[in-house]
Every structure is written in structure tokens, then in C-alpha cells.
View 1 (spheres, one colour):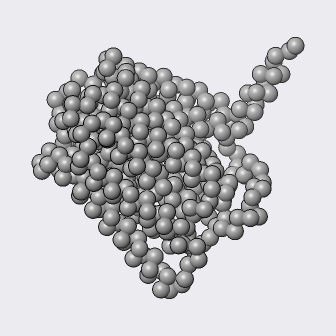
View 2 (tube, helix red, strand yellow):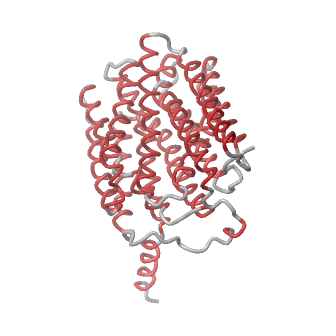
Length: 404
């Protein structure tokens, strides 16, 4: 039996299936999960306090914001595979520098470099995956993308917490190995030649809202507000909670389980949302998630063990999954420049993380450790009220069906 035709067929099928793109998405998310968990503990090991921990997160994400401002409007002009290749190479270099950082200055420089080149990875690959799809087809592809990166964020903190106890450089070495796999896959898969859907959607005839321009015009600004504030809370979860964990005596491996709970709830939320379109344009689901997120922020006032914290993160992660998916869907529906739309999505997310991480770190350092949580809850609740105001103003002009 000749194996060469079989190998050729398998390789050709792999290259032509865009599902291959979910592999580098997963691998890069594993690296991000490791990085967000380990860097706060590295800052602490090198002598930094809560404010320095928040600054490290703000530098990483702030540099990402800068890269989005520089390249965001031009992403659709370039071959996404070329941009993703460049991004992966420089991310690898930044992580390698982080692994040998002898002081906070070098660590901050590496974090800023990582964030700066990440803009060449996420928006291009997100646009590559979503281009040419609407309605149910778009919902499914975005769901697969979300499940891929959130699953990586489940694995990353768990692995990072365990490996960090072996030696501080070990989790970074593991992350570099993941990036090598991602680079191999990106180099094998074919470069996109067009933006055609992979096939007809059997349910499209029963799906009347492929592009609902009227309701989308209302829900898009609401989703952007909720996305921004949810990721301000996420910045606090990722970068301020390590300070609480240190104060409570929670070790890195146990805190890794907390990070896994947060990302696992995100992944489960994305998986469930991808199986149905019934949450689209439903105000009850949309606002309910934000109210529950505010409640999870308040619940951090009373946590005392790692599993208390993990339970709160499960609720918070599921809620952020709803707001993230909403902004992603409403943001790209009906659009043609998907790379640019994804850059806007990532820009909003990143500004939220910068404010949440640095702001919560500063408040922790100069005011109080736990005062951060009611402040965050209040901001999320105010954002929900602002969205109700937007909806009522739009309804006064033109009634919207299906938003109950």
C-alpha cells in the first residue's frame, strides 16, 4: 500500500481547512495564559509591589493598544498569514527576554514588546476566520474561535502555575514551545485567496436576522460599552487578584486553578453561545450578564480561600463570555473589513484591561486592597444603566422587535 498519496491528501486537506487556524489561536492563548499568571509573581519576586504588578499588565496591554492604533486600519491591506508569522516570531523573542529578565526594567520592557507585536496576531487571524460569513455561519465560526482561545487560557494558567514552582524560567520555555507549533501550522496552511464561505448554511432559510441593520445599530454601541467595562473587570481579575492571593497565602499552583476556573467558564460560555442564536438581540440575557458580573466583583470582598475565589471567577468568566461574544457578533455583522472590525474589538478590550489592571493596582497600593471590588461593581452597573438609556432613546424613535 502506497502511503505517499495518503500523506499528500491529508496535508492538502489540512492546508485547505480553515479549522487549522484554530491551532495557532489555541497555542497563542496558552502562552498568554501562562504570561498573565506568571508575570505578576515574577514582579513580586523581583521586588515589585501591587502597583508594579498592575503596571506590568498595563504596559503589556497598553502596548497592544498602541499597535492596534498603528496598524488597525491597515490590516485588511496585507496577507494575514504574513502578519501572523511576523507576530509569532516577535512574541517568541519577547517571551524569551522575559524568561531571563534580571530586574523590573527588563521585565517591563519585555512585557511592552510582547504587547506591541500582539497586534500583528489577533486581528489578522480573527479577520481571516470570519471573512465571508454572516448569521449562523458567522456565529459558529466566532464560537469556535472563542472556544479555542479560551481553552488555551484554561490550560495556560494551570500549566504556568505548576511549572513556575519548578523554576521561574520553565513556564516561559513551555510557552516558546507552543509558539513554535503555532508557527509550523501557520506556515503549512494555505494563504487566503478570497473571502468565500466554506459551504451553504442549511439553517439560513430559517434564520431571518443574518444582518439585522436596525437592531444591530442599537446593540452595537451597547455591546461596546459592556465589552469595555467587562474587560476593565477582567484586568482587575487578571492583575489585581494576585495581590489578594499573596495576602491570603495562596500559592502559584493554587492560584493557577483560579485562573483555570475563570478561563474555563469563558470557554463553556462561548461553547453554549455558539450552539444557538437565541441570545442575539435579547436585552434580558445581555443586561443580566452584566448585573451578575457586578455581583461577582462584590463577592470578592468576602473570599478567604482559593476555592472561594475560583467560584467567583466561574460566575465572572461566564458573564464576560456573554459581553465578549455580543460585541464580537454585533461588531462584525454586515461588515466587509473584518480585520478592521476585529481591531476595534481588540482595542476596546485592551483599553479596558489597561484601565482595570493599572487602576486596580494603584488603588490597592495607595488606598485599600478590597476597596477595588465595590468600585468595579459600581462601574459595571453604571454601564448597564447607560445601555438601558441608549435602548430607551432608540425605542422612542423606532420600536425594536425581539429585544425583550
